[in-house]
Structures are given as C-alpha cells and as structure tokens.
Image (cartoon, rainbow, N blue to C red; front, side, top):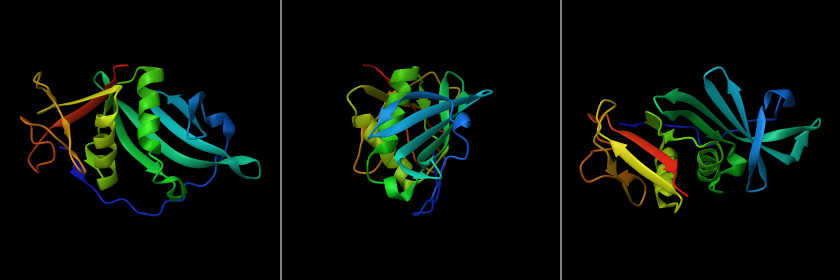
Length: 173
C-alpha cells in the first residue's frame, strides 16, 4: 500500500548546477523542458524553465527519481517547485515518460496527498491505463476507479494500513 507521508508545501528546487548533467531532452510540457538522465539502473527526470535563469542556468520546476521494479519504473520521489504547483505538471510529465520512453510506472510505496491526486488524475487520462494488484507476488490485477481525491478498486484495498497493494500505469494510446 502506498503509505501516507507529509511533504513540505513550499519547495524551492533552485537552478540547474551543470547543464551537462541534464541528460537527454525528451520533450516539453507546459512550456518547460523535460530531461532524462540515465544513471546506472536509475533514471533522474528534470523539468526546467529556461524563461527564468540565474547566471544563465535555468530554474528547476520539477524533479522525479525513478528506479526499476520488475518491468515497471518505481517513482521514488517527485518534487515540484512551489512556483509551478497547480499546473498538472506531474501528470503531464508522467504521461510524456510513458508515451515517449514506453515506461510502465509504479506508484511510490509512500505517497503524499498530492501524490494520490496525481495517480487519480492519471486514471482519468484517456491514453493511460491504471491498474492495481494486491501484492508483488500476485498475478491478479484489478482496474481502478477515480474518486474525489484518490483511487479505489473493488477487489483490492489500495490505501488500507495492512494492504500491500501496488499501483501501475502505462500508455495505451
């Protein structure tokens, strides 16, 4: 089960320190560049705003750390600069990663309230299929339903304290 965590409401992610560390440009979302750095077995996603610079270096709007988990990529942490919140940036970037790189995403084992809302919005996206399974060893999967704030499934308790449920998403269109 994705355990609830508390994230600070105000984040200042600062500016890119070295543009050579950004990796590969995979696209733009909401006027911001999305870069992926492949570092060993992990992926680091940086979303940068070139319209705001300091000493010629762009501001970081969002960062996502991904690690492999079976056939999926586990969202270890996603952080957005406070100046960019409310733009559905995380959903837009997740969809880009799934479509452009063909990634299957796995929800983090710990989620903030905002993280739960992101996965709820992903489920509403027409090109994304979100499903869950009761635990890592189960072959039984269940489609999820969007609620007001978080996902639900008929046969799986996604957010109950003793649940080991895993949530996944991938692009279908």
